[in-house]
Amino acid sequence: MARIEELERRLRRNSQNSSKPPSSDGPEAPVQPRKDPEPGEKKRKPGGQPGHEGHHRPLLPAEQVDGFEDHYPVQCGGCRRRLPSRERHLVGEPARHQVTDVPPVEPTTLEHRCHHQQCPDCGTVTSAVLPADVPRSWFGPRLTALVAILSGGYRLSKRSIVEIVHDLFGVEMSLGSVTACEQAVSMAVEAPVAEAHDFVQRQPVANADETSWRERLQKAWLWVMATPAVTVFKIHRRRGAVAAKALLGTFRGILTTDRWDGYLWYRGLRQICWAHLLRDFQDMSERKGQAGNIGRQLLGNTKRVFKHWHRVRDGTMTRLGFRRSMTNLRLDFERLLELGQRGRTSIAGMCEEMLKLFPSFFTFVDHEGVEPTNNFGERQIRFAVIWRKTSFGTHSEQGSRFVERLLTVRASLRQQNRSVVEFLVQAYDAALRGEPAPSLLPRIHDENHAFASIAA
Image (cartoon, rainbow, N blue to C red):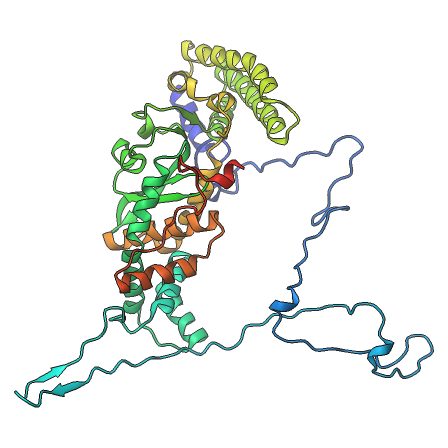
């Protein structure tokens, strides 16, 4: 009987009661119910709500406009008289309407000619060599960077990149040239990515997560370590503590993760993701007997935790009031988990594992700047998950290095509102000249290497 119940429970697993992604839910999975309107409140219609201030494209200042065209009315809207086009009859400021377009892109080709010269004394013929800062490939820094960002920043396939480069720029490019551009940019950003990895290890708070990957058709894992200003990625063949240590390095701050065993070695403060706990408690609540009863109580308490947290985040509850309100909830959570551990139920093992991590459930209550969920880390890795589904992973170690480095560059620069394209152009150009690449670190950071604008 217990085996049948366990098999039925596995069949009921979905994204709401387990760590399965929503994309794996079948048609039989329950639909998340919509929140019912409050008494007296009308049901909301799709789209913008009444009183919502719309978002409009701001007009560019006059100094940034390339040209002006003036239009004058030709006939009076009252008496229908033909109006003279004289400026002395104008009233008020004109209504402004701006149209932005992109001119046709014409690629430029610079031919480097290395001449041969014969010595008038000995007759030796000497050939000129290309300067060190001239690319040995057929493509310059900007086109090379664009190819890399189309691949690593927009998840396009190599064939799609070849078509886009031809359609937009009229440049012929082979599939092998796309790979060569990727590797050239990957080598150019190697040092900035290593510097970024060192930077995140010195931050006070970080989020970590991992997702499956494939390298050479073999199982691998893509890891992410996200901080407010810089995010780094790493592809590793392992999912356990070895890979987690390679990612976290010397990090000793507060680490937000799920309950995965790969982080059990970490001796610093941890915050266990409450979104994962919510799904675990939902799974418990769907079981029969005492296990289901305990799960429903844990689920109800979890909803109260989020309710209090949302008030703190919105400023309607002080941190002191929040800590006081969580005191009884902590005790109740511990009591229920101990009850589930002692009982001869299907959740005894899960409750025992949770009790081992119980001190890490409420780190966000005692330390400001810590979120109760790992949503930030999961958002950072979601882009890579979609890339994995369309590319089926990487086919070499060099390809894996390109993926993790471009993901690091893209995520970190987007967090800092910096241009990814310009960064890659500058990095590749610096590599050609033998100069240091630009940094991925935030341009404004304090003595403790924390992002100053985040604290502000």
